[in-house]
Length: 155
Image 1: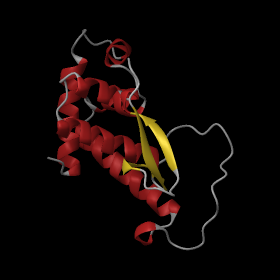
Image 2: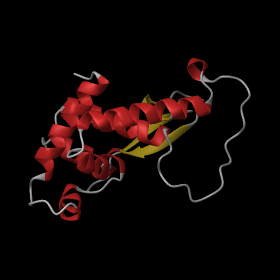
Image 3: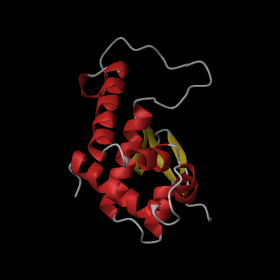
Image 4: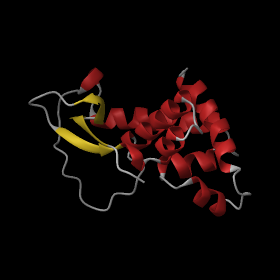
């Protein structure tokens, strides 16, 4: 797959949506890296599905559910951050949103949702891991993303 590298402004919550402004810290993001972006580029997901999946992944990353393999070197802040929340409160809020979205998807749909959106697995790999028939994952993923979009009020 061809890389789609885009320069994004680096914020406290991670890479922003828009291009980096001059004089600000930035990071290069590969848009083709996400399985959701791959599916969207080929017409398998709608814009609403993609937005819901990206929002879920942002909450998963902000909640810091991914395993940490090194020491944290984040500076200790004593004052509130954006929106009056300190980093711990933002993490707790992201965890609550993530758990709410997964709960809204339901027990049968949350498996494929987590594997593809959060863990970054390809849909065929997720189908094999879940012992599902071939080509069923895209359909089930779309159902799950529709429920997540309703939870986040997207679309």
